[in-house]
Image 1 (cartoon, rainbow, N blue to C red):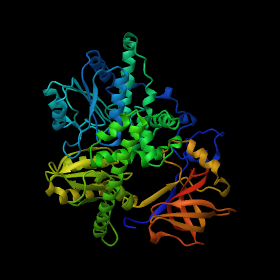
Image 2: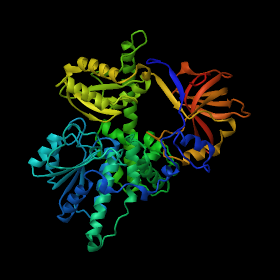
Image 3: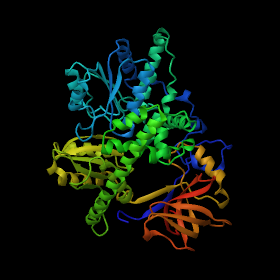
Image 4: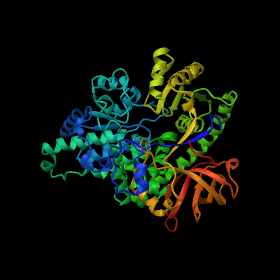
Length: 579
């Protein structure tokens, strides 16, 4: 494999973890290898969430929104064209309507014509609706020109965002962003949808104290009804699942599993062939989120927001079907781009080695797909990747995806400081960023990016490493273990789903389609084989019956027809011992 071989490394147990002996022994071992202090970190009660008024800018934003409601002003939500932006937009509109807002609507910029964030072009579109207040969600922290354009037009602006700010903040507006406050704020990892959820919590408190609901004969809304949107946006944006985000996602999943979630998310789960009664965080990330994202990548994310705002199950299912069709189209386009990109990567390798970071471009690549492409390639070559596409003006729009140990936004900042004018604009966070270049700047940027990453990392870290929770004994490979681990979620970024390693004998193997392999696996010292499945396994990597193979695998519940244990294989190689 280009970029180095894959090493299996076992995650060390935390010396400071203090966990209850009452936990299932496998779960206890897994949790001891996560960033937990003690069993109280497993308490995901909503009452333990931090106070909304402690979020940077939240009290001021709630006060401005209260005034807009009092004045019955037109409130326009300006979203982003990804799943976090779509869920944020839907949540803001739903909450404001629950509060009795007379005029609450949304506008999602088109990534191909309006650019990212609150640009002057977006403000021009917004001004046609004559809003009294613009509220950005999941964007805006770098929108200096857009905020200035709105203020020049006499429109107030609230920016709610979670991306890292630049050297200066937009002027003459209210800003809500955990990244602008204290570094020890418990909700610093909130996604955009979590930020606007907190703003609505703070607004509800102010309205309650002002007698808003009783004075108008309105029931005070339970904002927990919006947690399914928070869960989807948080997971789809790969936000770090610290205790705050795990709490939000956990309660959102409970609503969905109980049938109390919004019709749009349930419909997206169904077209993704997921049973809403058993939805997990990974289902949101790999089935629901991509279908929602497809609208923003290929068409207009307004379709996604409409689906999330739909209350009629039949109409929601129709809209989800349209999103599913877009997702199929997206996968076809992505496949062709990936084939071209992998050929480029092969050409870049010198004696099997690659630069510390890759910058790739083809004039036929699709702007909406380059982010996915960069992510796929990053997983393959184990180093940061930027994939570029050309816009209508000839500029190059890039999406960067990084690896642990390389803060990609900081790397872009260092390049911008060292070579002013090379990067027109950029923004993002540690693991993902976006940027714009003039067409003639690609070669210079490519060299600068590889050089900057090389300065940041040890070359040894640019190798493929799979980190596991160790081995399971054969008597621990049970349906009960799978259920316990499933119930202990949500698992995800920063709180990784349990992954185990071990040697197995391949008793039987049956191909499924062109890329998947169903297996019967006999564990070491085991008496009976267990079911396993490997997805997207190249033909050349497939073992023969009777081989002893080394696996990294997840323990899951297969609910097709009846519940049974299934190992989902993440990595397969000839038998070897982990480091």
